[in-house]
Amino acid sequence: MRLRFWGVRGSTPTPAAENFRYGGNTSCVEVRTGDDILIFDCGTGLRQLGKQLLSEFGHQSIQAYIFLSHYHWDHIQGIPFFEPLYNPENYFYFHSSSGIRCTVQQALEEQMSDPYFPVNMSTMEAHRQFCNIEHESIVFRGAVLKTVPLYHPQGCIGYRLESGGRVIVYATDNEPGSAEHDRNVRKLAEGADVFIYDSQYTPFEYSNYKKGWGHSTWREAVNIASECGVKQLVLFHHDPDHNDNFVETIVSEAQRFFPNVLAAWEGLEIDLDRDQHLQPPDPAERRAASRESFHIPVYVHGKRKNGDVFEEQTVLENLSIRGAYFLLENEPDPDDVLEVEFQANSGAIMEKAGMNTAKPIKTQLVRKYPVEFPDRIKHGIAVVFR
Image (cartoon, rainbow, N blue to C red; front, side, top):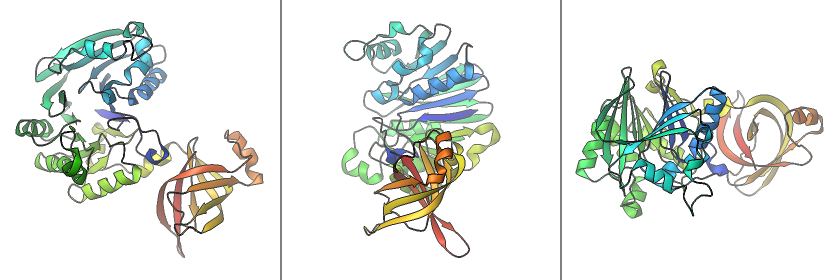
């Protein structure tokens, strides 16, 4: 089995520079079991998954099985923008629990009805089938899919997928404190290879002002993973107010109690057949994956934490359409704007890359870490263009 995260945020999309590393799209996880495509939840991350499927399949028919945890906006709002649903050659099978107030078909059609959306679901010409999950365990195309109710306003269900001797558990939007539902989620998580769990709040946030909102904490995630023999814990459904740096402090704290833990980011892939779940992937690999190596001379203008202005000449190490990476002697203020000015002799290279170098480019720092050299330490700086 292979899984990929297309949306990892909870409650509402958060497209902002400070969320660049983990992403701002809402819940959507893709799982491949052999040739089958399974999609867990349809938040705004579903839109990019749709584009990937169109690129992958070309003119071939697409068939996928969709499993919804519940019908809150952040878990269904990508559906109207999922391009493969508008092609009559494609087939999609929507599943959710019949116990969540209305049928799957009613819930999805109503979000695209007047006055909420300009076109209704009848414009989607793909073959669509709506299935209410009536049993706790179903055999599904050679895999076993188990479900349990979770503790969340208006209801929610968690999924345990067993295929080829591997187990993936998707349990988002669950609040601890109900004895029945606490047992349910532990039953679901028992021995899981990958346990994807709602970790929206810190323990402080939850205990002081988030009780009753229907979400869990990273500490509860660690407790469940430890008690149930989980191999890899993936913190999921990040709070809209938790930026990249905040999420990374949560991961650091959680690793003190459960070493094989990571926070899901958009684009994260885990191939269980290659045992990639047995150790956390290096986030640096993700940041470098979409970048091209460019050694381009630049001037960087910014401020240090004490407010002093600096200008430093350096060289871009790599570049993407959204950002760049370089080394600095100066340590910039992470909350301040950095201006990157390309030197005159770099113009031809940058034009080839599609960049306008007529004036300095404003950037936002998204990651900073020390890089050791034999005689000194520099600062590795990753920025996104504004």
